[in-house]
Image (cartoon, rainbow, N blue to C red; front, top):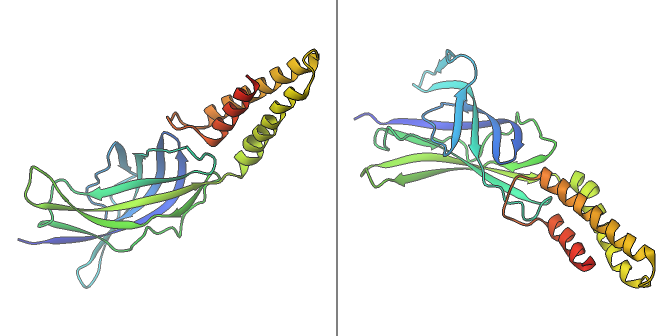
Length: 227
């Protein structure tokens, strides 16, 4: 039996968005059967790209691919959160005795990466795994790339976090005003409305999640103080 060894090289060229799912543009060398959970993968343009054959028998086929994969987002520390999304490439048709997958580099190539205004790509390490399934005695190798992202928090700090903290500091001032003062009620209502508006802005910015963010916790703390 002939064992075919494929060396996988991944080049990340563009990070588009991260909401409920992560969308990235990937340039894949030696693209093989792709196995991504809840993913959508299709080639760009024609499949008739040139194949480079070297004198030592090495065959290289470069073809750009757009891959969309789901990514669980943890926004507990928003806007200072960091996310990790995994992309697993392998074959469910050929086992390890028929086709071997190896990562040619220990990380993805980020030389052609176009920086995103919202996310900073910290790295994309690669790891080769051997998976055993209950149906088969043979092992199935795959290569997993972990995309490490960190949110750029400057926009949210100056436009959401700092105003929310300053408004929260106004809430205790209502306790120092006389009870018969009309400004006491006006201040309390104004602070509560302002915090409610910021809560709406935060909820529209982030994807639905069960985690409570730092800004959300700060806003509800100020509301509880007023109540």
